[in-house]
Amino acid sequence: MGKLRDQMKMDLELKNYSPRTRSCYLTWVRSFALHFRRSPEELGDPEIREYLHHLIQAKKASQSGISQAYSALKFFYETTLKRDWNGFRIPRVQTGKRLPVVLSEQEIQDIFSATRNLKHRALLMTIYSAGLRVSEVVHLKVSDIDSQRMTIRVQQGKGQKDRYTLLAQRTLEVLREYWKEYRPQGWLFPGKPETEPLSVSAVQRVFEKILLQAGIKKPASVHTLRHSFATHLLEAGTDLYHIQRLLGHTTPKTTAIYLHLSRKNLGGVISPLDLVEGTGKLT
Image 1 (tube, one colour):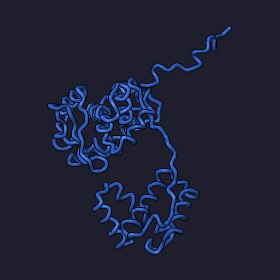
Image 2 (cartoon, one colour; image 1 turned 90 degrees about the vertical axis):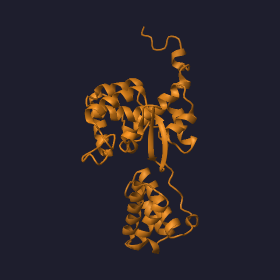
Image 3 (cartoon, one colour; image 1 turned 120 degrees about the vertical axis):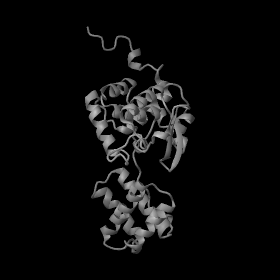
Image 4 (cartoon, one colour; image 1 turned 180 degrees about the vertical axis):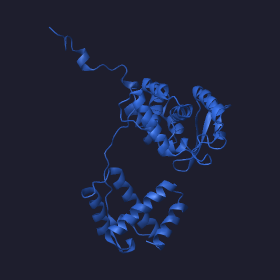
């Protein structure tokens, strides 16, 4: 793509897109150009439709992958080439709605109990107790922990936004123990070399190993700790507005998914099966 790639890269930087999103969008547009072996400047509505259909039918791409490709092409044609995307009349692929996995409070405790390494325990407790994304926890600095106000400062989280979230007393105690042993200076959880933050993939590998040790069978990921944080807060009586602020969500609609995960409003509801007298009794 040459000059067009450089122009799109600059446009993405000017719009303040995250490095991960910039890389993703550039990769998809390059894939689009390679598919037709022509400059994307020469392509339009028919080729975009054909390419997206190819991803769905031939490549069997995931819904998230197809959505990323759509967004990348839309950005390229709208912003970089300054064409009217609506004029293409290309429908966005409808994605299915799936509720995230949530761990119980007992399962959370089982995870911490199974985590023998002090650094790993401090890391996972910080993620859960503050509702952090994995990309946020690895970029925490020692100076982001405020024990006076009992808050954690998240700098430039998703959407390039700063926010404050909770510092639990138990987390503070473990972090103090961790600091005495490891003495981190810049990054709270440094990688190798220590001048670099711990990688996201390293955290994911640690969590997968601990899930096995804790005997948890649910298809959980590190991000499940964040979902569990929000769900447990809601069940404890915290309102959606404050949960939204703690999570760093832009709109209440995103936070409202936890209404579907919480058992708070189901506590007094009895299944009709349990109301049928004599059901299931052996004779």
